[in-house]
Image 1 (cartoon, rainbow, N blue to C red):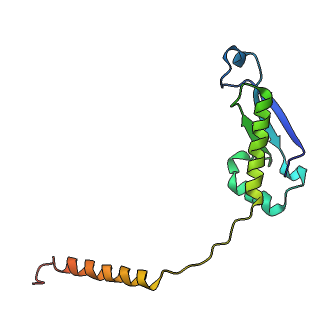
Image 2 (cartoon, one colour):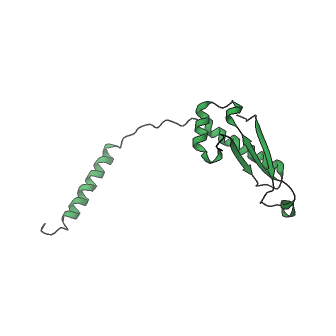
Image 3 (cartoon, rainbow, N blue to C red):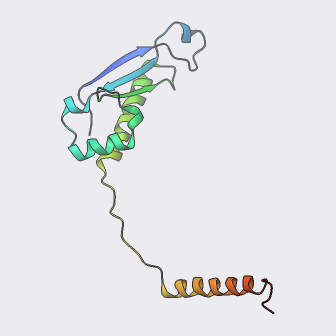
Length: 129
């Protein structure tokens, strides 16, 4: 799913760039309101909130920033890639857990070891001779 209604802001980056760091606004910050976009199912939105609570503002807006690259355009692409990766994770429903039981041999082995350990400790007590 590609987000439609997002807003980009730019600011000075603290990353690499030499003298350009002080002159150009290469850091990109993406603001996206999933409620206004409307393309995200409700359960996926809840999953997104649960997976990435630190990305949401109090107003319910997703904020993603990138300053990895020296170029403003590459940082915008990085923000969009991060958002797409987040949405892909949120749209994938979790697999239900299949209940399992330990094998009989594993249970017997555990109980045998418990008995052996108990006997070992019993033999160390006074008056057991």
